[in-house]
Image (cartoon, rainbow, N blue to C red):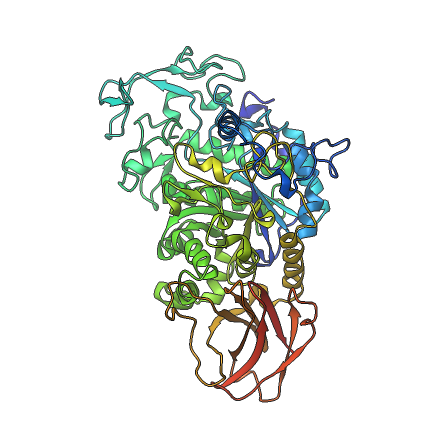
Length: 616
């Protein structure tokens, strides 16, 4: 364990061969997991002497059979559940066999010891140590080595904007009454607050708030370089999340804002704390051979700090042969803003753009015209970017995630409603073979259906894959690593084809007009219904190669439709072959190009199914 950055011998760590970066990140399939909720290394069929049996349908709801059990299950969802690095290491084959090529892991660093609710990893207390709930530093290195041996890259989730709850205010303004209690609440008003002291291992502010403050490994903040009042802005909690500079300087509730520096993007002067954070994250690359970072809350860091960090990390990574080390920023807001931030700061890709996730989900469920999703890319000229050259590798897209900020108070996974369990394969397929770098949220391949409201509502979309006390489907004591699950098996086939067919990874993208009779063509739309039950078809084109993909949002009826294809690439009489369908009788069947709406082919799409047809 390191107590100071001076204890780190970075040059010694660099005396080895590092894993090169992938040449093209759009070729990757990312899998995002909350480490605490993924695997505890006790699952039968996976772990040596594993004791947790595989979930069956009869286990659904076994944790909520009475009100007492249900309350215990809910309470288990806001605390550490037991997932660890050894468990994830043991599941690399599960991920590889599905077709995952990159794993994005929630923050692994040591959390404040007195907060049992910081299982998510975003409340860091020690930046140079793995949290003991998850294992130790060498366990992380073993995980990365195992993943690399299996051809899988590792992206770590990191936080620069704030630390955990490492000190306590002595607030002198804003008397607040809430739930019958009256107290003084430190809210941002552009002025600093007095501080009682750094928090000790029990959460009491008993440690002097001074440079080099004393204390053990569970006290205050580590390494010792961060034990300085100037490491923090000390301006209290954010209440207006869209007001600048409040969202740049305020605390995330109890998480304390780190003072990163001052100035605009072109004249930014970094702080000592920020320079120390840069040293921390260089260390983890060198120590564990990390391949990329997902950077939390980029909006709240500011563009000056983000640009300096991107430059520091990219230069360091190039020094050790990682020429395409990927920095993915959590950027909430519009595509235009994401483009602006990426180009100014040097981040590689954006995650969390508000409209993409919701429009993708609604298109698959027939709740919104598919053009609303596909036009996000087609109309990219509004932001001055060609879609297939920019969105191809600058946007990370996903159906579900651990926050679902667009859901408001009520959190829910894709499978929770609107026949999501019938359409989840379509959703995963659409995400995998449209523009962007696809990312799968853990449990989606096993049809997780969590939903719920109230305080800490996020828990309901953060079920434990290994079961434990807070398993999916309101269960406990059952794991969900089921390789025979229909969605897991079919999605693995789709990802295998994606890996083989470059147009599905790098090609241009076009939503296609369809027709039921071969004469009247148009895009899917609402017709005498509040839902669209239709085929949604699109093409991916690379050079002179075209692949047609289609999903059926009707989960009852098989549909036969004509689909428009590129008029110049296709001559009448040319054939397309079905290369994917859940109907084995459909595979290898061919359809012929005819002169309809320019050029078109007729395809069959079974209920709630995804198909692929390739130009022969």
